[in-house]
Image (cartoon, rainbow, N blue to C red; front, top):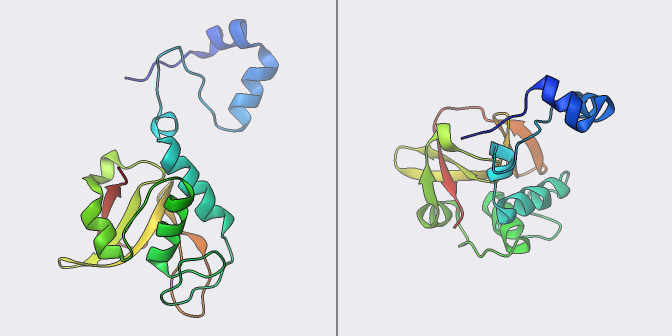
Length: 158
């Protein structure tokens, strides 16, 4: 359960400048013990997400696992390895290794698996707001994009 501080209390406790700063960046101030989706993200997931974002513009290369070129599962493998978690090599193997979560329970840092029927063919890292970091295809680069299909499944790295 989220315990949010309401605006009048925010002004009296944090001060007007802090309240305006929080509002400007879209933040939420929490009471002790409260959580939000952002706060609930594990430190591994948060770090993996930052690593993936830091690779923006890196070229796609089939079979590449970094540090300068990536295929889709190579980017997720590399990002989570830098965050202290080991993933298998392929998107399907990564899907099999994660704890599956519903779209309603997805969090930033979860893996997003694209599938056709039962076969997983692509993976990215959920960035929030319906977007993922991924390494799409030959001739393209690592970038942030909106999820373009409903044929996705979500997995949380354990």
